[in-house]
Length: 177
Image (cartoon, rainbow, N blue to C red; front, side):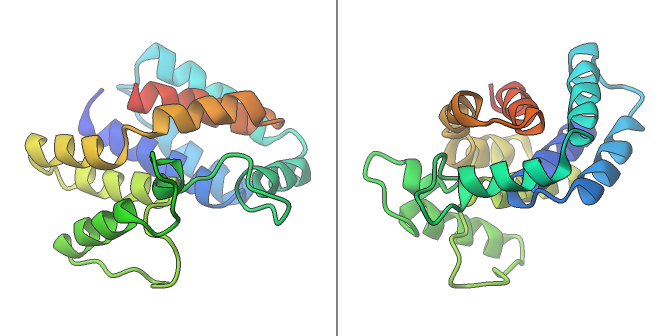
C-alpha cells in the first residue's frame, strides 16, 4: 500500500481509538473510501467498518469507554507504557513519543496526559507518512512505537463487544502486521 493510503488508514484508526464519535469516524471513512488504489482486503475492511458504525452508536461509546477508560479498570490499556514489560503509565515510551513529536515541531496539547496513547501514535505516524518522511524514519518510529500494537489488537479482538471496535482491531492487525 502506498504512503498516502497508509496515512489515511493510520489517521482513521488513530481517531477510532481516541474517540468513539460515529459522525466524525464516518466522515474519515468517507475520505478513506475515495482512495481508488486501495487493495481489495483493505476495501473489504473499510466496508465492514462503515457498516459496523451504523450499529448502535451509543453501544459503541459504552464499549469504547469500557475498553479504554473505565473507572472499574481498563480492559485494553491504549498506552504503550502500560503494555511494556514493566507497565508504568507515562514511562519511557511516553518520553520517547514526546521527543518524536517535538522533532516534528509538535507539543502535546495536554502535557499531563500520556503521549504514548495508541491513537496519538497512529495519528502522528499518519503525519510522517503524509509528508513522505524517509523510510528510515518511518521504520524507526514503527519499531519504537507501533510494534506493541499487535498485542493491543489481540486484546481488542478478545474483549471488544461492538462490531466496529472488532473491525478496528482487525484493521490495526493489517496495519502493524
